[in-house]
Image (cartoon, rainbow, N blue to C red):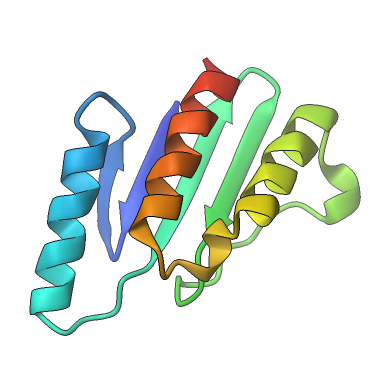
Amino acid sequence: MIEIDVSGSKHVCDSSINSWIQERYRNIQEASAEFWFIISIKSIGVDLRLPSAGAPRTRGKLDSCFNSDERRIIAMWRDMGVAQGNDIRVLLNFLDKLKREVA
């Protein structure tokens, strides 16, 4: 299961996720609030929380504790530059790829 927390509102990653994120992003911009997100991934062999810049700190595993599937997802996260959190298109592209990886 993939879930995303966008500035305090959570949603499961399903067919409506792109429009939900875009709507949240517009609402946050209109309110002049800070846009941040935390992606939580829980599936067989994967248990990760990936926070963007500005997200509340989360406790996670030590780097040495990640298995190969988790390391692959983290590498994709870093390579795509998702953690900066300043480009919603990058976030949506990452989620699309992530759904294929975790499915």
